[in-house]
Image (cartoon, rainbow, N blue to C red; front, top):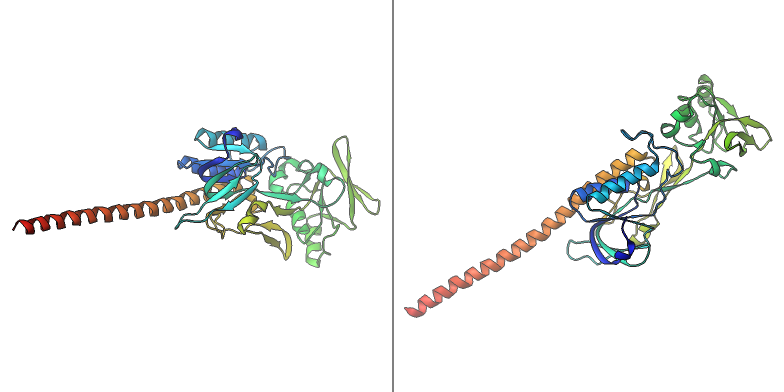
Amino acid sequence: MVDTAALGRGERYDVVVVGGGAAGLSGALALVRARRSVLVVDGGQPRNALAAHVHNYLSRDGMTPSELLAAGRAEVISYGGQIIAGDVAAVERLNSQGDHVGFRVALPHGGSVHARRLLVTTGLVDELPDILGVVERWGRDVLHCPYCHGWEVRDQALGILGTGPMAVHGALLFRQWSANVILFQHTSPALSQEQAEQLAARGITVVEGEVSALEVHGDRLTGVRLRSGEFVPRQAVVVSPRFAARAEVLSTLGLGTTDLEIAGSVFGSYVPADANGATTVAGVWVAGNVSDPLAQVITAAATGLKAGAAINADLIAEDTAHDVAAFRAHRRIRESKERSTINGALQREGDSS
């Protein structure tokens, strides 16, 4: 990490990366290896901070989230990248000069730096159902992703908390890891005949009525309490959060979010971008969960790499255009001088004759 007291006096960077998770660090790594000057400003609030381990990250499966980020930061720094802690206070687009774009980035502890390009990887916030015990157990025995946590809860007594139209899909997914699955309908839509048949065929029990709380004893989830008072023993509960993009820093640039719709229902928000992460604002890229709420850690890292490569290509195009303009101007001056020399020689020759 960098001493913030040494920054904030208008330093200039090729790229400022806002957010230091897997996506931000992957983008920063690609850029520093491309010999770009890079500053990463990390708010230190990774979405998976409460998870015990990272999974499905090839060669890093089982590593803790903090270990993965520490390794990533060390790699970025080893190539000359700089990282500071804190949230970016504001971002301002500077008046462009020709084809050049640039931004002023207000740092967490005062002062600002200039960036030719921005890569925003601020992630998202999981907005959880308002049920007693859900927030307290989140990331432990209250889960949402079968590929992140399914193996760890295999063969356990699982409960699926139905809060929307994807409840049946979630129950069928987690049935792959356990034969003991209950779907709590809670506030999810009534089952169609086809859905009821699918659940019955897979041996998934359906419990009607709303859930009032998750019960815990000895720091372990023991089950689900219904509003009727009925208690159903469970070892882990699956919930569907609302995925809210952390996009406040982009609002001053005129970039907003779009609703994430699945099966006709809104499940969250994200910042739209093209396949390489470029937004509709020139010079601004996004990567990771802020633009793809469904991305797992390794997927987020991949989007950061793609965005980093795209940013470098964009900077190369700008550098090349600038050098071509300078080359042409120099050539015009040289040709003008040559013409003046020739004209002068001709004039002198005419005078002597």
